[in-house]
Image (cartoon, rainbow, N blue to C red; front, side, top):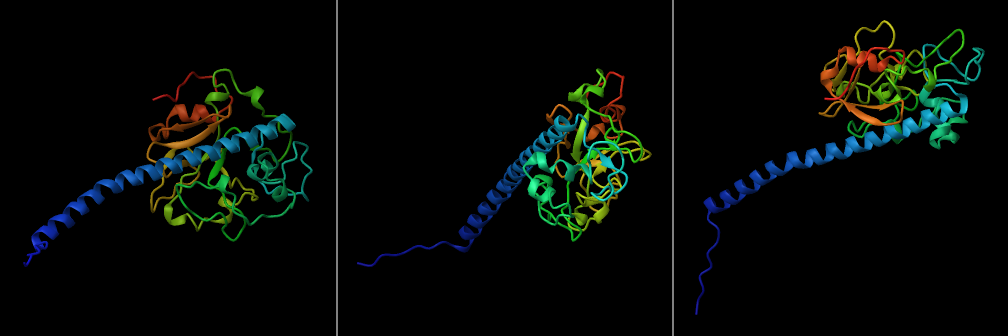
Length: 266
């Protein structure tokens, strides 16, 4: 007895392929959202760890680590304030369980995952040493080239409080420069305000989403849709929406001496 086997017709096969394509098209955005959420959570944890390091330095010296205008190395220490020998992000390494790197007293050339935003997926070195996706609030925490350095948590105004004063946040970047940033802006050792944002004379501070072909200058930002990530002076990490870019509220949050009431809540 013979049996007839009926195969798929061409039309049926095309229908199946079309259905699979539609399902893939529906799933891809969901997968991308999950990946973005995971990257954002990891970046949040990075900033939390940076906050721990900053507080560890503060506990040791009763001053905040600062962004520097000038290169400060172990051979150039005669300034009369807390022992900060390079950028703030190098100085706090002992308080983030990275003492071996700090104790080399040299320009490191290793990837520190805590200093890299996973939402960008870029290299942790750039030929000039270890690179950095985060920046200190230079409006408040700049290291003075001459004179003393006395900014600590107790000097933050009651109007701001530590919970409303930005300590460290993420830089805005052009994705084309993720692996091509100049050393002065990227390295964790370098001076000249490299790992700092919103400093003196740089205009109204902004928060921007990463975009190709844009020169963000010394502004804040991130690759995430909701806004920029920041760790405040109380150690809490929060997202500040891009709509606060250029607003008085953002300027107040960057100024530890602010006495004007404000809110960053949506």
